Image (cartoon, rainbow, N blue to C red; front, side, top):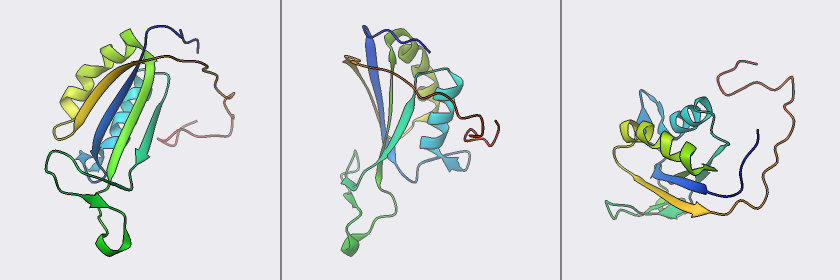
Length: 124
């Protein structure tokens, strides 16, 4: 996949680990849709502590273990591709925060696909 290094955007979706879309994790649905939309890539990061609009602190510390840790889904791609993906997020994300920032891509190189590797849906 070719990727222009100018005009890139970083899309970040902040949500809770327990947020769901049709009984599956919301972060997983966002990644699935980003993949289906042909975006350059998406990563999910699980936070160890944080709070959002409710001001309730969620933490992984042992004494106050939370089952709903903060999660961030990050996508970087060309501006027009990220902006075209935003309407899909509008129907998925109710509670949460979505940000878009300009970024500079210094290098983008992928590994060659392993023919034995399966995708998240279990297909080759």
